[in-house]
Length: 296
Image (cartoon, rainbow, N blue to C red; front, side):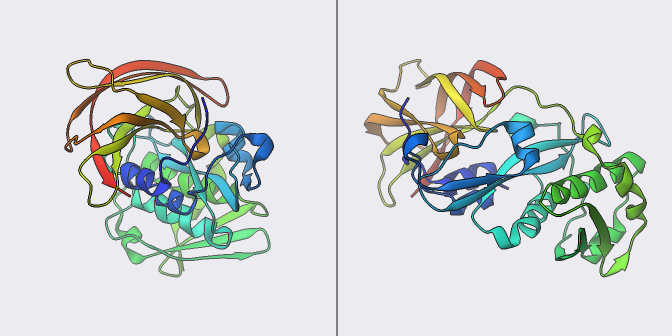
């Protein structure tokens, strides 16, 4: 499959709720030999998701955000993120962690939100190899059991400690020390829940602003993948004709429709897929998915 810029990463941000950091990384993806851009990935990213697909311009940063697990209290699940803003990577990552995953159907019942409503990241500062994270006062009111506290701390520490030059993380609430710091020593790779094979996250139709016809349909996955098979069909099983491309960062398969149609939001799209992630984990499936429609 060829690669294309047929989808904008801002649409991915809208679909995945929390992955707004993608919005700046909307460069065209070219074959590796011709790529002129650069993606710097943390060791944690490469370990969990493999090498980052190249971009054709600019410098982007690939990193991991660890979200607390509901299935295994005390553990965390890794998700891939990208940003062009090197200067604020830590604060952006923590902001997305606090915001949570939202109602992501593919992970229903697997993630938990331990941060109380209204919690904000007030400041992230670094002195030597120590990063201090200052949360707003809402965190002090969290009613968490021991495992939930550990998963919150592990999520914060592992998300921050992956960045170069960071060995120690200190957690504060409204500028004051917190008992949560007693748990930071227990935050290590053993806290990370092993990744399952790739998952289909959703399907979004893209159309030009003011137009009615959907020109492309994007099938989003939860990590960079190589698409081996992808077929999109209407509710009656009729295949939607068009050419299939892969998105920048390989996070989606993009169908450029041969005959654009005025699909309304909620239209059932039948998806057949087979993908393999950059570490070799294979997934395939068939699903009926409600179409989201976005303008660009």
